[in-house]
Amino acid sequence: MMIKATDIRRGMVITMEGTNFVVVDFAHHTPGNLRAMVQTKLRNMNSGALIEKRLRSVDQIEVPYVETKEYEYLYSAGDEHVFMDTETYDQLSFPPEIMGTAMQYLLPNSRVKVMHVDDKPVSVEVPASIDLVVTETPPSIKGATATNQYKDAILENGLKVQVPPFIGNGEKIRIDTRTGEYVERVK
Image (cartoon, rainbow, N blue to C red; front, side, top):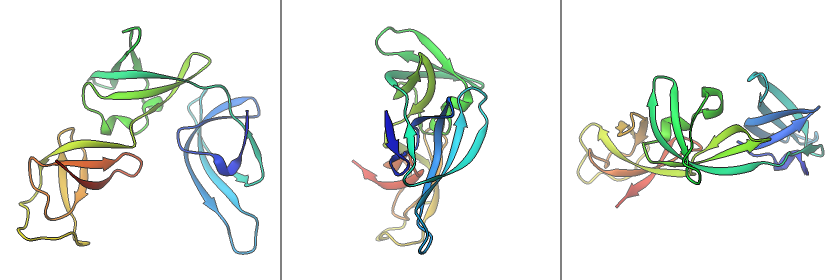
């Protein structure tokens, strides 16, 4: 299947010159009166090496067949993170280069989607947002409204984020996993 370079998204698998790459990051650029382009950061699935590649917006990019399976996060032991296939109950651990930044958002029993190309896991996709409990933050300020004055908060999985001043310990908040930022308070 072929797509335009402007349709590339984070986590997608693309094939260039016979090699599969996972899109780690991308940015669209339209400099003045020049042609639009897409600046990408790609991880080589064979070597794990990161490369940066600039694509023209009119370039056609090959996308291999990707199979997506659901896994449940069980536990971690050092750098090894163990997941269970929700259909077969097989347990697997994925190397850090496949996990990317996903581990900072996961709690035991969290469900993730793992993309496979040719029966080989290539990337782990967490939900777009997750709900976590604040375990440590300075006291909330009574009557405080959302301002640009954010404060540090540590969440139940150890993740550190910036939250508005009215958020207190024990409150559940929603985090955007694409940016790592606070979205809203959850009841």
